[in-house]
Length: 107
Image (cartoon, rainbow, N blue to C red; front, side, top):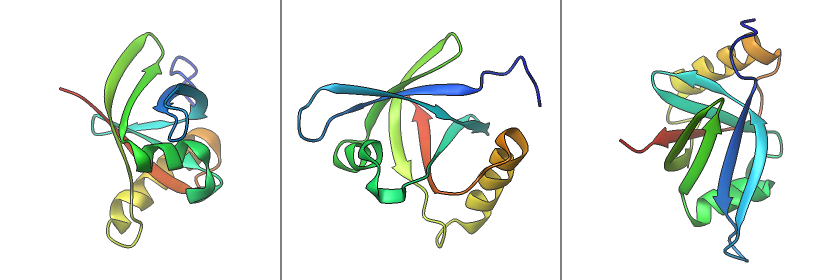
């Protein structure tokens, strides 16, 4: 494990009911310029439901701040990506299960 690498990503979504900004702290991995997080509760997580309602997000990793979009990775349609992200999560955190969400910074 690289102890200089940030362990957490801070994701801000827009509440689907309130319209207020909601921030969570979550484990993440970076792969090919994109960031990946995983929901232990799958589609039941409030933050996942917020993303499905409005995919515009902001997030912070270390001192870097991003605006961007989020999408759920379909394990059936993108099995290689899902396997790669799960493997990276296992290496970093010894855990890699759950619903994978991709965060794409705006260019």
